[in-house]
Length: 123
Image (cartoon, rainbow, N blue to C red; front, side, top):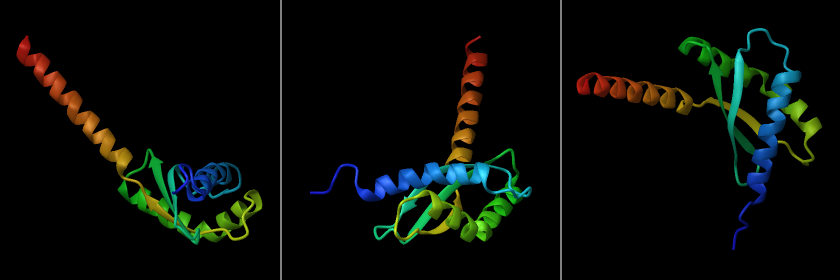
């Protein structure tokens, strides 16, 4: 029977916290926007970590540029992460843009339009 909160989940959670700190304190690249780590998914063998990020206050091209830059900086970020985590091997980092935030904002916008439209009809 699998543990309720297994090793993968613990490593993912800790990696998310440490990556946030590394991006905040150690990455000094002016091209990098305001990046938020939404989720870290680690493979079963802990070899690869998919890191889902959002970039606030950026257009589509800036979002792509930020993800590309993060993937270019991945070896340096991985090195800093290795200093902070007590693991024999640190996962290969792969950054991906998380569209769920944008989707959520779009749904909220559509819902507010529906509510305003319904209020106008009932008046």
